[in-house]
Length: 202
Image (tube, rainbow, N blue to C red; front, top):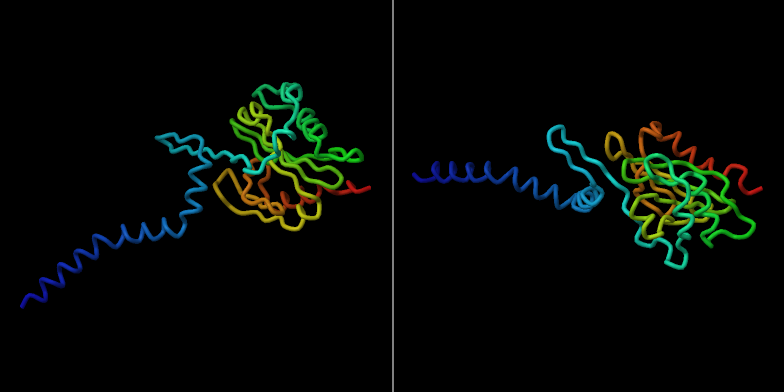
């Protein structure tokens, strides 16, 4: 005679625990993506819920001996305080990572927020990623990574991320932020990255 009561209690228990358990499972499955998202957040505004992402510095950024000179970091800046494109190119050319017969030829603004800007700079045989922010200017670690031409062009994949920010994989470098405002069409962005090396091997 107690079976209906037991069944009712079981159903009640199941209904109360189903969604919490489902949420925990989803968090567990996507824990890496959630952790990456939270680490990128730099601004959270209550009300209209404004979330602002920031590109994390590369863990294997150039060593201190390869940091840029202080006078280059103190070069001409624009109104928001970011380095001019001339300074960005000089950072690459004076880094000690470019051969004598190389020079930075083309550049592409990749990401732009109130806190930082990211540039891709191509020499004849290499692709550099330069991250301009108050933190990297202070540390001198503006060059985040470099890849040779073949490796950089071996893989260019673009992924959705947020309404105003996407993610791009370039060679061995994964999940670098790009501003959709600067690059609204993913295919065009892929072509622009590839185009950095057009005629650069002459």
